[in-house]
Length: 255
Image (cartoon, rainbow, N blue to C red; front, side, top):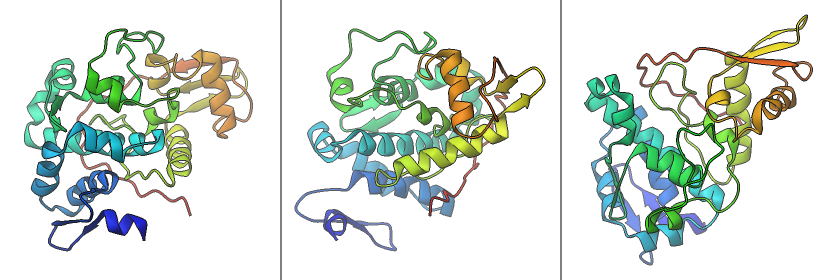
């Protein structure tokens, strides 16, 4: 009932506010649902553009709220941006680094959202080991407070064929949802040779190896999630398929 008083979505796509509060997590979820349903996101985008940094930080208090919101935002705007201008994907470095997502008075790039907010001010190309020391005010206010949740790498979809599918995440069930997608994605992406105890898995575990606790941490993760029957002695990484693939949605089965 409490969430109902924050925001309700009508069939027309308009928003109802109570006590000047907005449930921004619901807005982020609606962005993705509208994309799935082929509906306009104009009102939701305008709402995000016109909100304030103070309102957003007040609404997103916990790391789970922040992560659910920003993962949904990232995935939604990837779909929106590349549907409108697929040719931009030919220069991926420029695409991810270009400020384009207008939220709370700021214009953010996908790199800002992923590495600044969700990964708590990490240097993009550092294998996950280096922190940024000088960060803008908005980043310090919006980023997560605790350590990086490595499972987020299996929730973010950058538009490539090798990316994890897009799902709609919620703070309430985030652990179950992340565990579900982690298991499903790693099962699809991992090959294991029992004779040599060699696992070959997704390149994300190499690019951000610091987030996973290095290669040894990645091997422990593969065993923990039942991807390998034992802890692999060797870990190799598959080539990443950067072919553009939009509309790759998946329902989260966490019941």
